[in-house]
View 1 (cartoon, rainbow, N blue to C red):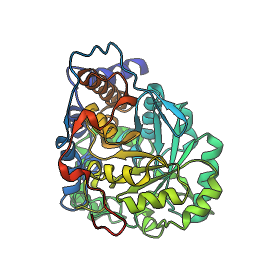
View 2 (view 1 turned 120 degrees about the vertical axis):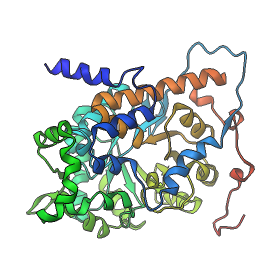
View 3 (view 1 turned 135 degrees about the vertical axis):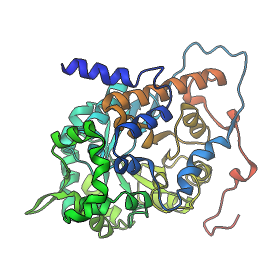
Length: 408
């Protein structure tokens, strides 16, 4: 019976029903309650940065080498000393267990099977030990300081013991962004204790009976299993907003975090050359050019436009990754041409998770891999290692590198 159910999920996201990430997005929208889908799909305020992240890739065009035979393409890349089968890492996505039962384990398992890395959010409904076991490959742990320093230190020790190979420190979340979809969908009311306040919003859950049944069977509203409060246990879902506002990470915190971790640290949330250089100064081994997928501060530049500035500012001193707006393998190629070592994707696989669990995540990875190979062959490039700016054209203003004072 389990094998049959798994087969049905795989078939539901197979070609020709699902041929791109947008198809997975539509499938997730059909299956999930509006409040959960909009949590994945939405951004901050007017969602300008969310849209700009995607549009930026449209502003980069290719310069192919024609009449070049490329019977096979080498997608392998080394990130923080680990070889990945392709330059793709699944980014930390909080509350994945709301999208599908044991969602973080399902996503990690798909990433491990594909030979790529998975980064687990602090705000996970699954124990980090179970996620590492599900992957059996490269796993990173993303750290928020929710619950305070003692909670963070406990999670760091658990992550080391479980075999996580890198610690991702997110620096762009001093408060949660103004996500207007969440307010309209009644997130606060649904999480509150007032039954009358819930009534206008609960119908969006009930009209998705398959999701709702699985949600209840998986234990209902999850707790954050990796934020263990001394004397209280795992942090309740309802406590997270206030906890985030009390857990701002500063550059000074990187000292004790580094001492506790003792391994490679990745700084996620770099928007400027100045912060990129600070990441180098504090000893980080990698950074992620990221605006949190447009979910935090709206009206910041799309990450692809910031990438050349960051790469130029740090040289070979640190590995540079990028996230934001990636929906196709050709987007990955453009990011690599502009200097990224690899990319992280969040929504692209979260849509797959919401649509069909692990089978949906595997399909998202498969789509991006096929896109990447096809794009390389059409470019006449046999390896991701050979990609550079000679394969693309960008607008003239993209090449501007700002000084530390902000002048050109």
